Length: 301
Image (cartoon, rainbow, N blue to C red; front, side, top):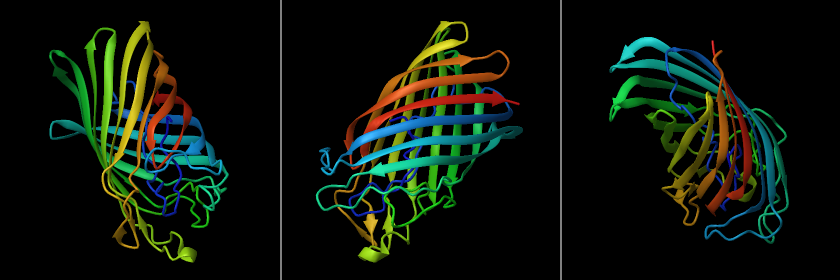
């Protein structure tokens, strides 16, 4: 899916990783110059089955779908730090969730919280946008993002807009224009989560801490017409450590997914840019497997 997985399934069968940037970013991931940028992401996602630790489907016809609206404000300043420009950003998601079925025979119902506000993300960055690699333009950014537990959350629901935890994600991103019509953008994350202390108190599971994870977005594009590019993009997530339930590591809870798909982007001379893409998931473990469609708009003030 093209998605930040904007739900938290608070149950002992994994599915506990919080919202992540899985495939949202693509062409020209590194902003080209100082200024204030506004981005809006509109995404739909649907999955008709959940996979277990071995990649096999759960019975019970579990389904999940959502529509996401995510607003991002980025300010890249003129202030120099370590030879790059200092910047800041904030992201606020809003989401409509739907779930049905059960996770396996006798498993929990896939219930969805009807709240709409996800967790607020804030970040600080240093960006270098005037470098060269093999004589070609090479822009790069180092950033630290912190996701705050501000979203709506109910421990009685499997699907929630908020995860009820703090998440710390340092990442490195670059965009390399290695030929007049070709470029590629990549973004590499490390994810650390705190514990959800309001998980499933009615079942004796009071605290769940999602495991540490590594994930990245990838993209390659080609300019077919002036300001119009086609792309192949995707993402990969690999959970590195098991979830901890009531303080103890629980085997078989690591999540994994690979996403891929085509897209098209248009950069307007007036400062607006648009991207439309779809992505499909494969090699999925301990997550739902589905398909997403994303529309992104960017405007520089």
